[in-house]
Image (tube, rainbow, N blue to C red; front, side, top):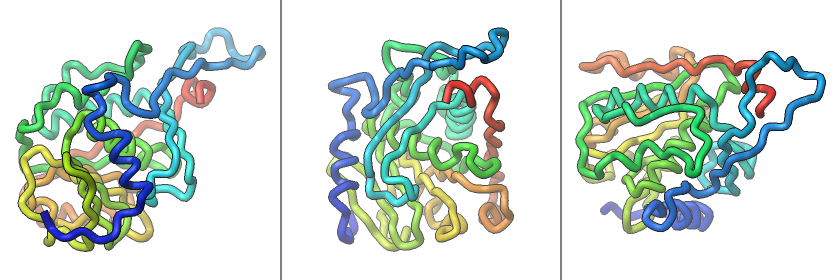
Length: 245
């Protein structure tokens, strides 16, 4: 394990709260069913669920958002993105369904064995602004930690966090990470500060999952690769989702 830079206490607390907690509680941390309150004047013919899954968490210290308190509204399309990501990684996706109302949030990573391998590939979630790309990536991080699966997260150029069974390390460069196990996912939240993906992640054996806008500078890292990463475009918010949110 490489020497770690300073890890903020919020990040350590985030790991402690989430890591491998499925052994005590099948319910992922911060997740709950929230009732949907409809306007009395809303179209009665529009199908809107009575409850929706949300994930509400405090500050994580990961600087993925300017908002220190985030509520993730679990969109239907998030489950479709899970299915495609699983298929791209070579995992069975047949158990992933949407609109499940309980009793537990359906964490698809609980059916992934820690030694399951994945092909040399990557997955890109993209779409318009405000559509939920970054929050989907954060949901992936929470669910993987809940399932006890080693995961890398990056949203800033010189802050690469590796969550694993013994804690969290933070390094400046991918090259300082040792060769990872086959089941490590590297979650990269591309933004104005972190434009693209470091190809060195693939040399470390990681399955790269990127959240990015469709701008060329965000996804031009795929040029020259020996494979074409799977791209998933999040659908625009439906009227039903807007009402439920």
